Amino acid sequence: MSTTPRSVLISGASIAGPALAFWLRKAGFAVTVVEKSATIRDGGYPIDVRGTALDAVRRMGILPRLRDQHISTRLLTFLDTDGSEIAALEPNVIIGGVDSEDIEIRRGDLTHTLYDLVRDDAGFRFGDSVETLTQHDNGVDVTFRSGREETFDLVIGADGLHSTTRGLVFGDEERFHHYLGYSFAGFTMPNDFGLYREGLTWSTPGKGAALYAVLESKEVHAFLVFARENPPIEAFRDPEAQRDLVAATFAGEGWEVPRMVEAMREADDLFFDVVSQIHLPRWTDGRVALVGDAGYAPSFLTGQGTSLALVGAYVLGHALATIPDHAEAFAAYENRLRAFVEGNQALVGEGKATLFPSTAEALAERNAALRKLTKVPASAPRPEHSALTLPDFPAR
Image (cartoon, rainbow, N blue to C red; front, side, top):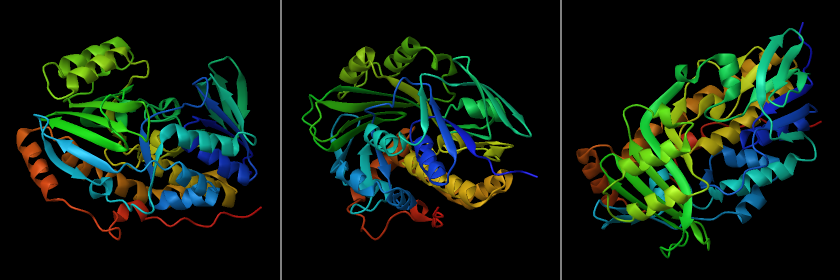
């Protein structure tokens, strides 16, 4: 008969990991968080917290701090291939959010807020990562890249789209990786555009470029997105190959694209990846579970990655806090969260067509639709964002 697990290793200290650490510590678990980066990652593009996730952060007690950090992008301007304006819209017209409630925040501000919340209660190990996992009746034996060896009652993978934990336990990523036909490069560059709390999005068939300015920042977040039939696997681990691929793809394009490509060449914070989702038949195996992008990445086209991570952490934490047997707790986690995740992943069809059409016909249709849009009433958010009601967390 299973006994209540007390020690938990969480791999990943971005969003889902620290959020889950908070709930597990609240329930009395001994928590260790391992993160391959040398420290909590700073900066990063703006992300959104909305719907059910707002309730999760309210229950954590950090909602006021996040509202203080709200950056509130005022305008998204869509540009045609020649750089002319198609439409200038409030962001919620596109994402279906609630302007008075949703939070837009710099990714680094959220990760630091979560870390500050739990740093004194959980053990954090930076600059290390999980190398091997061996499950048995009494726990999970873990070997770390540093050579350290330990045994934990449970291991949770919160290590993102390309999760090492998932690979060790569930198999090769390609089995679960649902490629959505796009690759992208993100980086920062000088804000020489006079932008303030706004974004510019340029498109041509199969390619897109975007600039986002956050408050009075001297830098803008730049993105170059392009359609590609197959993921560029050969470039995943080679930054110079990534830069070459992006530069070749956008060669000869207009607007500010040449400046962006030049800045991308010199950027020291280039982040290159594919636009994908993770579809798994289950998120748990024995004493190992996945949370956030590691288990159910929705892709940035949905705008729900952060919210799913926060909600998933709450639901998993609640299950482990209320159900002594870990197998039963994992089953409850899956049963409660599965429909919510799948509903939000399904948003990608609409987001894909709206943002970066891959054909001239689809782009013309998108532009025509954008010209007809005005303001979405605050009473009309997307129902998928709030489709789950969180259970009360038990008091200790």
